[in-house]
Length: 189
Image 1 (cartoon, rainbow, N blue to C red):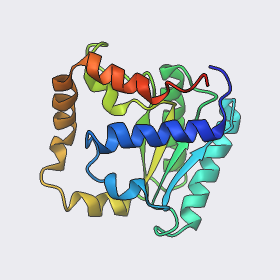
Image 2: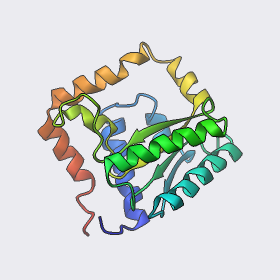
Image 3: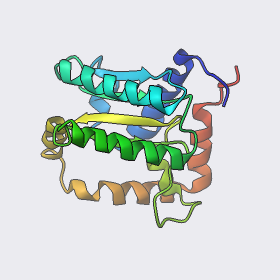
Image 4: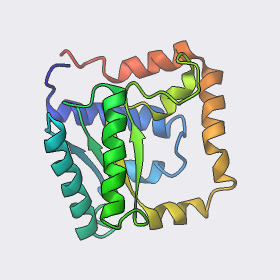
């Protein structure tokens, strides 16, 4: 992947949030945060895992130092490394271990998104994978208290993944892939 300007990366992420997450309602909690300045999108310039570890820890520190009104949630977008889904999963495992070592595993929750995301046990051509695909590798930092509060206002939140799978499969892989490809159609421009 060629080096892409941070502004273009952020544009693609915002398009993904709108087109997939909000319009398809893949996350029923996202709509109010999309336009909120408390949504932080950090396009990480790291191009190796060591730099990425530092960026991850810096993001954790920033969230801890900020109020919910300042940073409700954060997306650490990683456009220059972790292109392989396996490498991404290895880093995610490290990130979860760092959370635990820092005693933050009950305070911050990580959600994972990657352009090649595959759910274990699902057919590789299933449209369901698109529920966790993003234009670039990213880690979503969520405040546990906010997640808990949001879940209290949703009937049967455990059914969200199944609903998303049914929705995406119902749309069909070709339709979902076309919508997906439109997100970064301007990348070469």
